[in-house]
Length: 399
Ligand code: DNO
Image 1 (cartoon, rainbow, N blue to C red):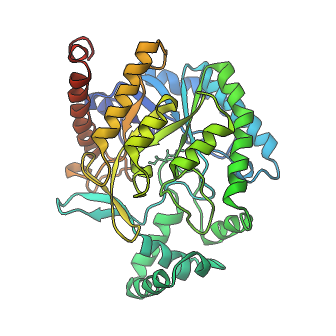
Image 2 (image 1 turned 90 degrees about the horizontal axis):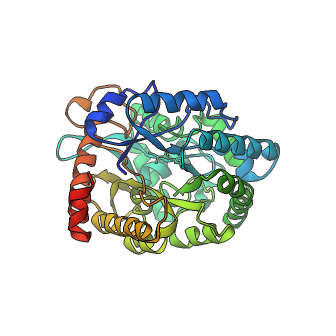
């Protein structure tokens, strides 16, 4: 099912534009309740009614935030896990079947440029690994940061910092720590330093255990209420600020699945996030994890040798997008054959460039209208082509 992320009534892209884009489902969350508290049933119903009234279905909540204490399994975490379960149940009552969430400590998805000019004169999001190191080492001046970089990276980061204007330094800081759309938190230099310190000594193995323990508590509630959970990979899929990240590779996914081995413990297959690592073989992963993929983010990145990447057009870039889409559609066909009720896997065009009238307008970074419209249109072409290849009849009987 073709879906579209909508941030709620405050989103500069209104529901009728989404209708014009041809999406059938809305992906949404209660972004005004994003501090780990429980989402009241009436608020969830209100969002559902807005979506239904505009002629859409609501197949996915992206995301229910996970309070930091849950990731650390310390302090008030039992209270926040209970709130998470209550939110899950409220969402289930509203008829939503899939919940996307992530387990990235301190920072959610991260970029260093929100308007990186493309040769086409449009603008893309970019993660520059050297700029990031320059921020960490020279602006945040994180204690012990040197230990997390190679000597070569430290050298290039210092010279990058020296060449940056004061304005660029400020922009870089805002871009990295002030929070991108859908992220749980926004920081200033002091608050982010404090939070990073809370993770001192927490290893990836411990974070993975905390995720496993969380899953064993919430998955039974998901099963009872008929909801499937879909963890979103780390973006970028590697450590930032020396913090552990545990949803970056195929092995990470295997460990998560093994921690609670049931279909309700599933994955958001984000092509852009996994695709930022050259050692992730995306088509193989999409096939291997197929039965537990409950949501798909279709977005591409072009990787650069130093670990940087920028968001490429949806069908260009470093990953085999069509190969992934074919794997997902074959999985859907397989689910139909075996009678799985969840045979329509929601997918959305993730992020778009700033193009034409998007430029200069108020948009949520990554969530412009025209850029995503183009992305969805291209992807829809692939979907139709693949439907025809997999089974020409589908082209006639389905929309
Ligand atoms: C970025 C998104 C993320 C994602 C969360 C999932 O565009 O993919 O904000 O929603 O990380 O919890």
